Length: 407
Image (tube, rainbow, N blue to C red; front, side, top):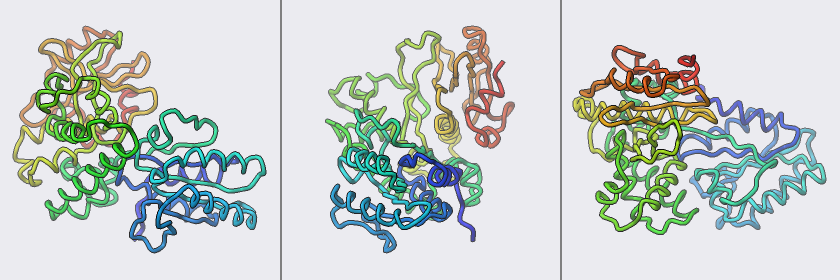
């Protein structure tokens, strides 16, 4: 059986084999989205000799790894790659997986890369990490001119359908995690996988271990709250009340940003032409599995609860827009008094209001009309019955819909 390849594989191959500057290729993205598979596939296709090393000590007899990862070990592997590179015409690739387990790695790697540029040594390097790129390299590190980030996102409905024969409803409920696809007939195993192999390690290993989090328990409870209220605006004051914490809104906003960077949940601000309007953020999971797994529903129970299913559909649309948007495209929601538009995509002068119709919740044409009156240059789009079918909408990236409905 041919192994499914995401588009990122071709990108990595091109950057490994076609980049004359030999910049370090950095594959980053949320946990369990297939970064290691992308690297292994790219290494096989690039046609260069390579060594793959893993810093997280997986159960993988084919990966060379240290008992205790250290910077000295990293320097040793790099020196070995230099020796191998000198034996070949095209160079040698060193692939370092889950590099966030090596504290201070980026500074050492910059120095080694600079030495290779000075001597002309043809070492090519690829690194991966589950933590957000800003945390991975250090918030104040300058990586300009040395690293080429390749951002990996959650799997789309089309990818899950092509790779695992998922229906659109299965994607909505089970989410876009390839490692969980085999558990769809065993919902309790699937639920344990999502909560214990993805959500918990993302918070504990990819956020708390790499950045300052003064209240880890508050972040965990905030994640639980976000999964319950996905698709709904919720003021910081109400969040604090729900969390029963004496913290402040600045802390909550910072924690939500960290959870967003880690690919779990985002906060959307209310759209305003001057972009400075204070508002209650709207919470939205970035993979519907982190919403459905803790809810306790089976697949059939979730589909039978039309209100809950409607929130899943709206959350899936929000996640798709966030995960597929291009650089420079912003995502908001809009609310004024009793009028609300689910999502607002904007890029420069182009603005698109998107309303989702599903479940018991009816889309409000009056809200779309009012939105256009307040923002005369904006366009609107209805997703669901009477508009663009959901599966069709989720098949194209955010930029497609913004361009399609631009003036």
